[in-house]
Structures are given as C-alpha cells and as structure tokens.
Amino acid sequence: MSAILRVQDLQTFYVLEVLGTRKVVKAVNGVSLDIHENEVYGIAGESGCGKTTLLRAMFGNIEPPLRHFGGKVLYRMDGEYLDALSLPLHKSREMRFTYIAYVPQGSMSIFNPVSKLRATFMDFLESHVPGTMRKSLLALAEKHLESLGLSARVLDAYPHQLSGGMRQRVSIALATLLRPRVILADEPTTALDVVAQRAVLQLLAAVQKELQNTIVLVTHDMGIHATIATRLGIMYAGKIVEEGYTPDVFASPLHPYTQFLIHSLPRIGDKRVRESAPGNPPSLLHLPPGCPFHPRCPYVLARCREEVPPLLEVTPGHRVACFLREVNHGTA
Ligand SMILES: Nc1ncnc2c1ncn2[C@@H]1O[C@H](COP(=O)(O)OP(=O)(O)O)[C@@H](O)[C@H]1O
Ligand SMILES: [Mg+2]
Image (cartoon, rainbow, N blue to C red; front, side):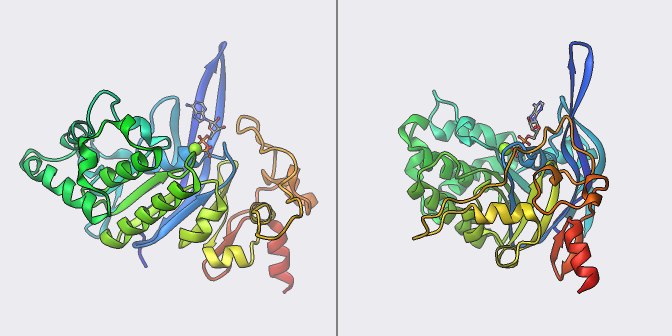
C-alpha cells in the first residue's frame, strides 16, 4: 500500500538564542512514518515529547524558532510525491484544507469572539479557495454540518454561545469542508468532559466515514487511541519508539515505555494504584546518550546507555526501538 503522507527521517528543532548562547530543543528528532489512506493514525506520548511539533511540520508549517534540520514530509498527489517543505507558496496554500487540514490544539481560539461563526467561517474559507468556488461555500457549509449531525443554525451563533465541545465539533466540521484527504487533529478531546469527548470522537468517525480519508489524531489519552485509532505511533523524546496496529500494541506492547502508558490506564473494578513510568521525560535540550528512555527504564542494558536503538520491525507491521526486543528476537 502506498502511503498518502510520508515522513522520512524528519528533524525539526527549536533554535533559541538565550543571553548570547544558542539552545537547540530537539522536538522532532529523526521521525519516519507512513500514513495510509483511510486510517486513523494515533500519535501518543507524554506532554512535551514533540507531538504538536510533528503535526505542525506535517502541515508544512515550520516557522522560527522552529527550524528544519533534515528529512522530508511528502504528500501524495496524483500518484507522485510532493516535498511539502519546499512547495512554492501558492501550491502550499492551494493544498491546505483541500489535501491536508489542521485542527490545532485548543482550536476554540480559532474563532473570533466578536463575530458570528458564519463570518469567521467564510473569512477562513475565502483565504483558501479559488474565487469561483466561493459562492457555493455557504450552502456547502450548511450541508456539511448537517451531514455530520450538526445543525446549520450554529453558524448564527457567537462562539461564547456554544459549549466547548460544540465549538470543537464545529471547528472540525469547518476544517473538513473542502474534503481534505488528510486531517491532522491535535488533542481535539483534551479539556472536554467525557460526554463532549464522545461527541467529538463520534464526529471524527463520521467525517472519516463520509470522506473516506485519513485522520492523524494526536492525544496523550491512550483510552481514546484504544477506541478510535487504526494504528498507533508512540512518541518519546522526539522519536517514534513503537508503532503498530492498535490491537497489537495493546495486546503486546513491546517498548517498556508503551507498557507503562498502557498499564497506567485505569480499569473498571481494579483498585490497585497504577504505576506510571518513574521519573520525568528528558529535557529535549539535553538528551541523555543512547536510548532516551534508558534513565527511566527498568530493564536497562549497558548498551542502552551508549547506542540509540533503531526502530525495527519485529512482527509484520509492528516496529519497536528497543535493544531488549532485538535480543529476544535474535535468540527466539
Ligand atoms: N515555540 C517554542 N519554542 C521553544 N521550544 C518549544 C516551542 N514549542 C514547543 N517547544 C518545546 O518543544 C518540545 C516539544 O513540544 P510539543 O511539540 O509542544 O510537545 P507535545 O505536543 O508532545 O506536548 C518541548 O520540549 C517544548 O518545550
Ligand atoms: Mg501538544
């Protein structure tokens, strides 16, 4: 299967000048991913591991202090791959929200508090579609909202008149109006109550079903990945440390970090205190040598302190970056 979006050994770092010294935050540090058509690809990991930075780079949005140090983001268009990080401005503008849409973290803030949603909506779309299409946009917007189970009347509301969950759903509906092939959604359910979370997830599922497209869903909430993600990438310190089909990752997590993430999920009827990974994630300013997880890993080997484990396929479709698995694999 050829990927709809490819990330190849991507490195994007924040470069900060603080009191005359240069600091480099390695937020995305050698990520390779193939995103398939018609799947929900989940990206998980603790706060600060680089999820938002990766998503922004996938949208082709690398602006100072973030800088591109290497690797590629490739969009598949008409059977060929375009380098998203060196597209001419008019081309990237044309592709945004038609090929790829981005729903940023805290997307409530994309609405203008003093305008009705209809006005914000039209301003936003008019900057992304050719003049000839603009007339039909409003009708299209109303139809799209209704097809997703939202009343077109929300367009007559001011943002403050809607609940947080409804605003989030409307922002997803708007970002998907032009039928993008890929939707990047950053923590769309964070800060919502459980009922609103479910409504947002149902909406994402409805969008995916209607458009038959691809969603890249970032959330630190493993429970949400378990319900909606087709495949799952686990991110740690700017790297993907494990990737696989969601049922495989949950049934046999291979990386000790993934095991911690899964074992810290609450379970009904289980009153035991859940362990979380001891210690804190490393600072992306001062990464430890070797495997970035080694200072927290209960199974650390001498080698882990010196070498960075490569991400290798252990069983079909299931990749992990861990020397323990290499040993097991080799001796099995
Ligand atoms: N504008 C910025 N300037 C400097 N460092 C940043 C900036 N934004 C994020 N970072 C740093 O980059 C790292 C990754 O952040 P982010 O991509 O937001 O992670 P996540 O979304 O997983 O929480 C963190 O160490 C964060 O402090
Ligand atoms: Mg984030």
